[in-house]
Length: 336
Image (tube, rainbow, N blue to C red; front, side):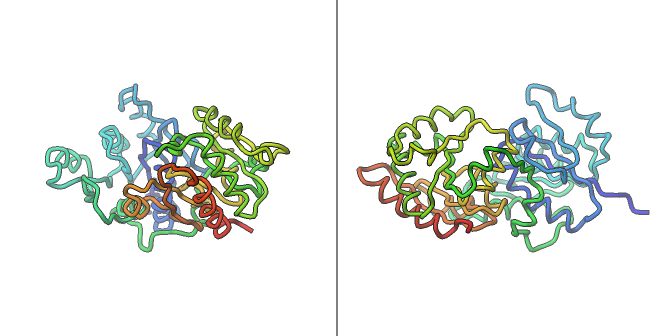
């Protein structure tokens, strides 16, 4: 009798980066429908996955990697997707006991690091060490790890299939986002001389042009003060009557619920764009002008309906002109 496969994902960074691995997990599930799944995560992304990931191991960088050895060994992992280039990730993959381990290496671009990387893997997948002018999408790059471990083409891209991997919770916050334009408030919006007043102008024009009635400003606990500052600068018609609301410091599953409930999401290039696309939400993804073609090609939302737009440096009148373009894009991608 063939032993049941147990597949481990190693991803130690942020929420969006972990979400980019979901098509690989879905591809592995299709090839190994009876497999169980586990993941080694950072504290940041540990609550991202649904119960399809039966076991989440939280890696604490202040502790030696060996502290997870017994926990990992008890799960009987057979295949490990090492979707990180952190040294700890390669070590954890080996500690898992998985006999098949796929990860990245850089060939002669970084010869000493590459030799070490290859020594930790059973399948070394080439990834350029430096950026290229015309990169493949990051999901495609990560999926090559799955191909090395038995996944098959094409890369899954249907949001209905990918959403099942995310831990989405309904809540009052999520329900308050229903039918609204969600805007992820983050310091990335401040590049190019933008400030809270300009962002508020951008949001108000976006809502007007989109044909929707309300906006919710999503923010982490660290960015709540910036979101509140944007709210303070919203025009009176949008600040009053609950037409604009700040949703800050939500748990990760509740934040996912808010993204799914909103009619569309507007965000600078953040993990919110990747997650929302896999939830099937419409996304308007803003990138700075410098490197727009390259960055949007590699990092645009993988699933869902989306538009990528340039966010130019601030000048007088730019919030209004960009808001008109964003509002048109929201109208195009928004859920009915």
